[in-house]
Amino acid sequence: MRNRPGTGHCGVDAAMGVIEGKWKVSILWALGEGVCRFGELRRVLGVTEKVLAGQLRELEGDGVVVREDFGEVPPRVEYSLSARGLALNSALRPLGEWGRELLGS
Amino acid sequence: MRNRPGTGHCGVDAAMGVIEGKWKVSILWALGEGVCRFGELRRVLGVTEKVLAGQLRELEGDGVVVREDFGEVPPRVEYSLSARGLALNSALRPLGEWGRELLGS
DNA sequence: CTGTATCCTAGACGATACTG
DNA sequence: CAGTATCGTCTAGGATACAG
Image (tube, each protein chain N blue to C red):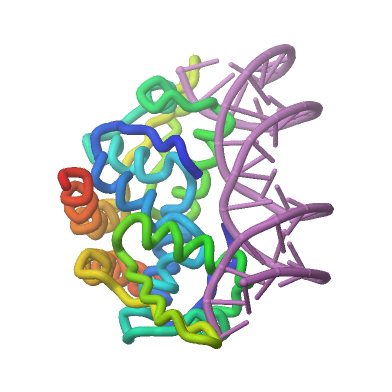
């Protein structure tokens, strides 16, 4: 969903652009628990390789996720949160509390 | 975008469900400035009636926006934020700051 | 194991016309 | 003015197959 309007709340829009994607916040959440391998992430979330790879590429491009390739055979790649990713997770917390209240009402 | 996973960060997911939609946060932002009529909103955002109406219905259904119909002729309808909507706007602020930092880097 | 390449579908969004 | 009704488009996401 590109082409977001820039009505003045630009910061939120920028953040939404980063978060947008069906699995992004789930990935952020999972990586918040600690480093995670591709396949592990895949199993936990229950998402196809193509989609997971895509979301990870975007998160990586936005600098919130770090990809580390160990260049081994068989392949071993680990994903983790960058400092920026950690900050994003924190910024998401109030929203999470708001949502939780919504659920319990 | 329904069918979000429930990996444990359920609150954020619930919130994302409410916010999801190209114009939702813009609407929230605009109404944060004060009460607003349908056409006014439409002009400010530059969105079609159909889409705006849809987004407003959903926000109303989620209890963050209040619709007041004055039953006049010609029609006069005003939209505003509920207490819950105000809280949502506040919960969005940290995310906005995170996004702003992202922009200025 | 960690991806990429194709193909396909649902649904969000937009353009336009119309109504009370 | 504040919508509803139709129709068309576009793309994110899913299924599947294949590759290094």
